[in-house]
Image 1 (cartoon, helix red, strand yellow):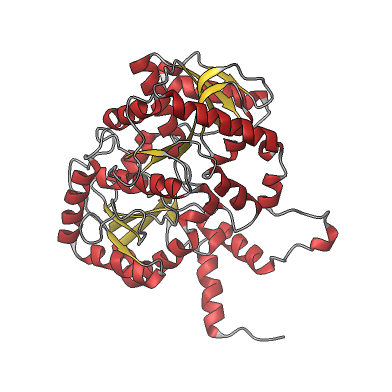
Image 2 (image 1 turned 90 degrees about the horizontal axis):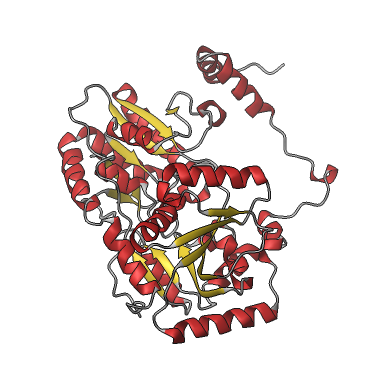
Length: 435
């Protein structure tokens, strides 16, 4: 039998000292085997499976009819919008950034302009999901209580405007003929959620159909226009009453928050783990690292000695309280939207660290409102190191971040969108709207 060397023995002892749970995870990692694909039925890639689903089915005649509707919409000028039909995904948390923003807009036009909002859960046939979505909307936004919420198989009534949200619903919007106007609520460049293939091709085509976009940041409006379709941008805001700095200074180790989501590729979970292991090795007990955003065990990924994961928090108040308890916030975003974490970090007085990204540098300006670096673990870790050892730098970025987070407000941003939807204001022809 091959003898274990000293280094390997030390590694095993370190795992065993962390208890039976971590030892179990280590065992199963070591025993993990690749699945034998030959024993399975033929399997499709997620991208191909999505495109073969009913939601993506569309005929040439339906594409032509959609183009005629859009042409009539453009020629009509001002449109009196009294009813909006929304296509929304089945969601579990109403407070998630994208879902919360579109519902916030629906709430705004209901209260301010008397619009009747209707919601179709386009991706889930389970009646229980429809009931849950209806309840969650009503609890979070009382002005939307009583709004119609239906499943994907229900025939939708005519409306003044129909809005796709998650891009998977866009082809359902194309098929829908009983709307006077159509829009896509664009909150990221969703073709990048998939590898080059079937889904990314059909989702990119959505931007070429001429459907006007309501774009969450100018970066997204700009790329939508580059594909030949009009767009109006709004700048995301943040609730600075909820997300606010701590009232007193905290003592103890420097506390670092990481937005860690293993199942969301654009948040670069692996880059985060590699970065934070370096930070922990450099600073040891002088730093404390916590994560949230998704339920997972650090032991599963071999970082039980690096960080603690708090999982999925249930309310925005819990999230805000967590951010206030931290000194540094780390979030990766590899697509065109910065996500809401940087804005919430900034409003909470947390120094923000992220990857360099030309589509988000309107918000994350290096050494001014945040620290950024190329998405290389050693380079990101070096920026965190600066903040760990320099409390004055943390404070300077925290102050600048709070000012940046307070620039926009939802009412102003949504009113500009509404005036554009109704034709009282023209769509921005090129990059004239600030992010």
